[in-house]
Amino acid sequence: MRFPHKGRGNGFLGGMTKQFSIVVFGQFFSQFGDNLFSIAIAWYLADLTGNPLLIGVVTAVFNVIPLCNTLTGAFADRHHKLPIMLSVTVCQIAVLGVGVAVLQFSSLPVVAALIAIQVACRIAGCFFDPALTVLIPQLVDEDALQQANGINQGVMLIGQIFGTVVGGILVSAMSPAVFLIVNMALYAVTLICLVVVRSMHRERMDDEDEDKGHWYAGLVFISKHAVLMHIVALAVIVNFALGPILSMDALWVSDYLHLSSSAFGGIEAAFVVGAILGSVLTGNIQVPFKAKMLGALFLMGLAVGVMSLFPSFAVSLAANALVGFAGGIVNVALYTIVQTYVPNEMLGRVSGALLALTTVSQPLGMAVGGAVADAVGLRILFLAGAALTLVVAVGSLAVRWDLGELRKS
Image (tube, rainbow, N blue to C red):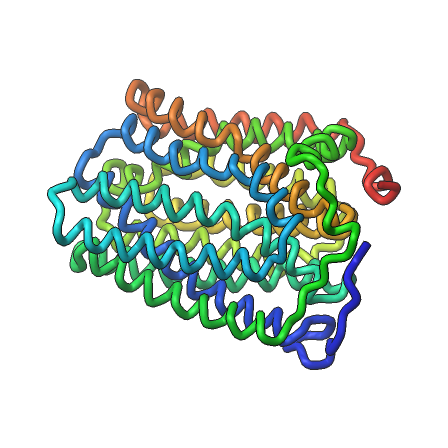
């Protein structure tokens, strides 16, 4: 079932409430801070170690954490969403505060401290994401879901652009402790937004939504629907293939393009700009869901392949923008399908399980990719990942995707 909606005329776009606008505004600041910090860690690792194996393993550890979404999705189904999001934001601010103290007053190596802080913040974030996914359908009309998801993704990505560009420029001029303090301030803005939304929006927990089913119910739901199983299989292969590319981008810029952290920030920003355009424009791409998904995967593989064959700043910039554009299309299309057809009382568990399953191979790809890059170089690794992505996208054309089976559930 879906929640009733009120006050649609008050939103900044038709079918969306003021509460949705405020939640999205808060997301901008948290994403700004997240990417500011992530850019700093990526560049410190590349600059201080220059070791692709180490970078691959550390990035893999970061990306194992989303597997927790299978459990946290069940938590989101059973509890009010806004208190979860508020609690997570407070915890992240506290972790960053402890991090500042550790960096200032302990002898722990900077890189080790930053990694520990990032792991703690990401674990807390695993509770935030499923709660937000379940909350959005309460704040917008069903026929506005795709537009709302596109706006939410787009605004979050704009925040990432700010974090990426500012981080790339300032990483060599600011101490890690200052990065953490800035991130705390940005999270504080998100916290204020969530407090305001909670004062305006009263969540309902109907009997169905209080379902006490098992935490793995989302996995069971996915296993019963062939179209979701095929999407998961696609994601597992593609994330394994392209995972190393996402973890080795700083090393690609510094060792292969021989450019500075500012150039790295620019290339990362190009990825985010592309993702914004993909997120916002996906609703205007009037093609079937399957064609949209496979076309996006084909574009990813083609872009990475060209980048590996022609290593230059301009080509890397364009390739990252195209990969981001394709990723934005995939994310919004998939979120909308899940929010539209999955029963409300199962939404947290199914979305959490999907996130966990579709990213499960990425850490492995990053770790294996680090070892492979150490042996054969990044260009060959990137080219192999691109080729595998193209083969999978083309091979999936023959598989039938029946969204009707989701409608019947």
